[in-house]
Length: 109
Image (cartoon, rainbow, N blue to C red):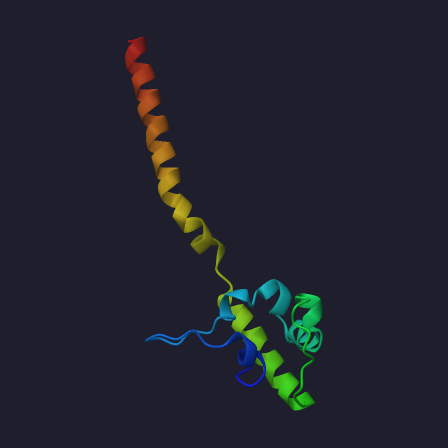
C-alpha cells in the first residue's frame, strides 16, 4: 500500500499521520479477500481516474488484498453507532409528544 496506493494519494501530514484512503475502503466494495483481490487488479473499474495497473507481484497483490479487506471490516460502523446521533432527536420528539398529550388531558378536565 505504501509503495502503490500512497505513491499517488499520499499521507496527510500532521501530528498524527492518517491514511487518506481509510474512509473510502468500504465493506461493500472491499470487505472480503475476494472482492479486494479483484478490485486491486481492476482499480479503474472502482474509479476511472485510477488508470495505473497494479505493478506488484501476485504475493504483493494478495497481501494488499488481505490488508484492504481487514481495513474495510475495521471501518464498518455498527448500526447502533450510526443511529446514536438520532437518539437525542428521538428523546426530544418523545418528550414533546408527552408534553402535548399532558396538555391535552389537562384541557379536558
